Image (tube, rainbow, N blue to C red; front, side, top):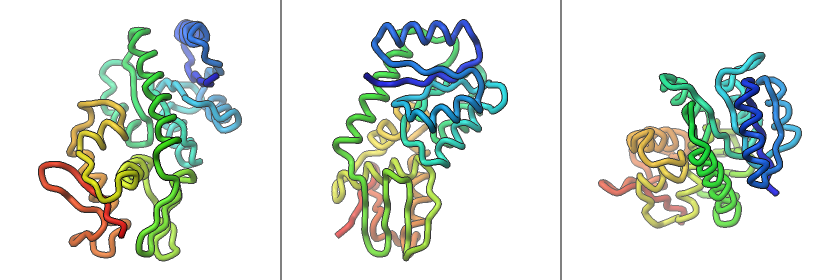
Length: 228
């Protein structure tokens, strides 16, 4: 049975989500403030976190940031209000995997929960746990990267992009596939975001980012990783 942690301070929404998820045979944990939810996530290690942005004691954005800084690897689904686009963007950049806008339909929320859990299961069984090339070592499970023995700070999205490329090393992965695989939905943010994150990866891992040897652009299509 998969475990879902709901961090939500609205009692009506919390009760409704808990009942629906339990009906769908998920094991459900709940927290009504950010600090309690953060501690519960680290302690119980749920398979998925449903996280409201507006929380007492610690905001949802701060919960997301702190969880990712602690290498919490499981998917985070944000609950946001209409008109909070800037918060959604920031949440995704901090490591959230998807979002649902309030008021939301139960069918949409359950579909996104299933998709995130399905994607996580697929990643666990098909994606590599480690990558090595030149003087670079990346541990995807621990969210750690080193170049010439020195730790490299990388965001969760950068780890995700690199892991997808490593799974198909030598083959081209399209921008759309990278966007869908790492951000989890089709049209937001734009494929330009993939380009920005790839440029950051090159700056951190390539010996000469201006003339990359490992993270290669295939113009008009996407990217590929060369490891041999």
